[in-house]
Amino acid sequence: MFPVETHELTKRYGPLVAVDRVSLTVRPGEVYGFLGPNGAGKTTTLRMLLGLVRPTSGTVRLFGKGTGESLGDLGALIEGPAFYPYLSGRQNLRVLAHYAGCPARRIDIVLDLVDMADRAGDRYSTYSLGMKQRLGVAAALLKDPKLLILDEPTNGLDPAGMADMRRLIKRLGASGKTVLLSSHMLGEVQQICDRVGVVSGGRLIAESTVAELRGGARLRIVADPIEEAAARARALVGQDRVRVEDGALELDIEAGKAAWINAELVNTGIDVSELGVRERELEDVFLELTNVG
Image (spheres, rainbow, N blue to C red):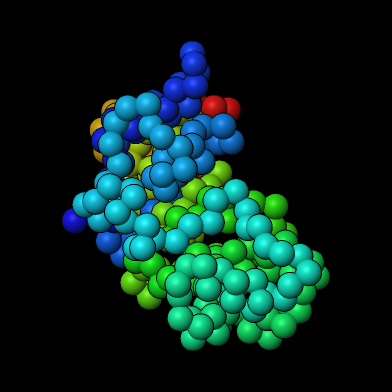
C-alpha cells in the first residue's frame, strides 16, 4: 500500500490544462522530490492530493484510501505557513493542537524536532523566514502523520535557512516518515531525496531514483589531437559511448578504466593533458528532459 498513488490525475481551468494525466507513486519511508519550474503544476497537484482542489479527472489514493478518509495520516505545508503574529510559536501550536484534537504533549515534541524549543516563547512576528517555515513544519507534524507533504519549503530562505530545512527533512526521512517534497531547487533535492518525479507543463516526464536519473560517472579527457583521440576511444569502448563536448572527450564508462584509456591514448602518440571523472548534476538532467537551456 503506497502513501501516495495517482492515476491520470488531471486539472483543467477552462482551456488551460494545469495538470495533465499525472500518474505517480510515492513509496513508504522515502523522501520523494516533486520537481519542476514555477508554474509546472506542482502546487495544483499537491492541492488535489490534499482535497483542496477537485480533479477534473483521474484518481488519488493515499494509503489506499480516498483523500477524505486519509487526512489523519498526513500533515502538509502548502505555499507557506500562516499563524497569528501576536502569539508565540508555542501558543500558535497550542491553538492548532486544540482544533486538531492533538494531545498537548505533542507541542514540545514537534518544537524539539524542528529545533525551535529555545524560541517557542517569542512572538511569531519576530521570527525569521526560516523560523516561520520550521514552525510550519512543526504544525504539520502535530498529528504525528505518516506522510508529510511540503510545498517549496526552502523558497525565499537564505543559505543558512536552506541548510537548516535540508537537515530537518533528512531527519524526518531517517525517522521513517514518508516525505513528498515539491521544489524547483534542484541542488537541494539532489542532496535529500531518494526518488524524484520531474514535471513540466503539467506532465510527469520522468520518475526514478536520483542516481538513475543522473546516470553513471563519465570520464572527461582533454587530448591533442582531439579527432584522433576520439577515433581511438571509439575503437576501444564503442561508437555510442564517446562524444566530443566543449573541446574534450566525454566517455560513458566506469571510472576504474581511466588508467587503461589514458595508457592506450598515450601509446598511440596522443597527448593527454587532463583526465578526470565528471558526474552529472540533477540540474543537467532536468534541462535535458525539459529541453531548457
